[in-house]
Image (cartoon, rainbow, N blue to C red; front, top):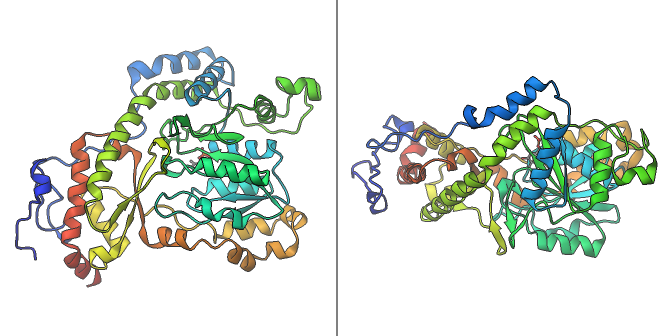
Length: 443
Ligand SMILES: *Cc1c(COP(=O)(O)O)cnc(C)c1O
């Protein structure tokens, strides 16, 4: 089976030649005639254009939140098309702040998807509310909206959809369900800066939208987060909360000035905001590049049996791509397990992850349920972890996490088109050699 020098018709256009032997079996990586892609290093920093404002901030000595943070908040609200924005120390706390100020807390249930970063359920737990998982739609990797209503109980107060990978969740349906059941909606848009449904940015559908500017994110500033909303009172409440509870804006008339409100301290610094403003300048053009590469990559990968890239809902007009997710069907790869496929792909020079593990059965949940606060806020039966596991089962998500899910990170989508051809050639080569790779893994 290693005999034929297989150059698929598909690649002759691109002058990419596959060598016979998979790299994992000692062969040369994918392409002998072209250099391996130089995957874009992240974050990007361009001293000449990025540093002037950062240096100005550093030299001014004004480092705690002031004019530059205000400037970033105005720019971010405008970018997203929301009336107001308040920044926070990170995306996790943007969600905690939003939920807490929408009066979500002890004794409440919050509907969330299980295919997300650990920060999502942790944010819910921090408010004292209990996360209730709704299974994943395997085609889109988003919360399956058809399964939300069966998990709504008299305790349900909020839905927290996550636009995972930068692919929009089905916000139209989610808002309908929220309205019907009188629930608030906080969007976890921590991977979705500029994604759109019907030309409206995600983060602007719910009561509040939360963003992250952590270093791996598409607008990196080390750490950072933001809440956007058209509800000005909510933003004033969140602002007060993020600044020790000192009443802000419309809250002064309601509560009086000074330390009149419940709060904590979540302020962004001036130098983080200056870094964010520099990164923000690139966001639009990078988003275009990622989208073009992703569309091309998706079309090519769909031709390989057993590789099923993400789908988007019908009204999605833009995807921001923090990740490029796909499903791997080992049946089409001679039964080669996902872990071996990923190892072989990495050996070809294409970094690829198996993605998120299951969250809805992890010890952080039972640990939270054993805290004094949870014991006071919920009846013992609700804190019985076996019963909780039964109540929040997500079988489709289990398959994605344990067997089929995989993703490329956003920086792989920033290079030239030939990088996409390289990825396709690598996977194609593994597909053709799946049997011999499987044998070598077994022996
Ligand atoms: C990154 C991320 C968060 C949390 O953001 P931090 O800024 O790291 O706190 C929340 N949800 C999702 C889906 C994320 O990817």
